[in-house]
Image 1 (cartoon, rainbow, N blue to C red):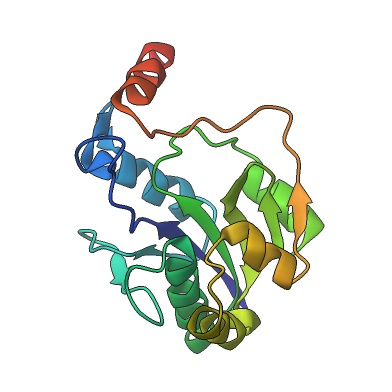
Image 2 (image 1 turned 45 degrees about the vertical axis):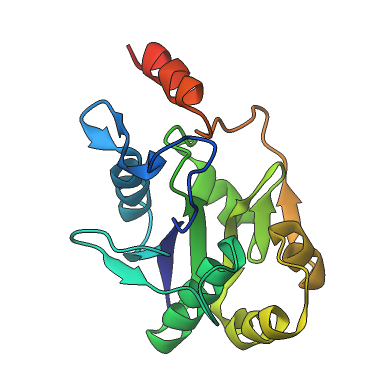
Length: 178
């Protein structure tokens, strides 16, 4: 069994004011950074919630508009149908992830997520049907709520993971990149 990487990329970028995943950091878009980070650590990569040139795009399950959990459900379903035991998820707006993050999550074992950034996690594909059912029956659409439902562990990192919500966040990352 192998590891599927999934970029959760279905957000609307309201706070950013335009499609933030198309914004550039260095030579690449934020989405390209996420895909590249996962490609170096997983056996295959998908993008959930949008199309991405050169990478398989998945439509959220059981329907669009369910937030990151809809993307996770699509990734888990795809992983299970294609022989991947687990899914490593990251959002598209965190281009400065620790190099060893995947290994640290794997040391704990799925299900596990990053405390303070629960869209980053390692999830067993065997939970696909359970998550789809949860989304069809529950009003709780939070990643933290889902993590509690399946008794996922939380990995505490020594430093917070910077993410891009506003143009100023991207500008700050550009300054530190130099």
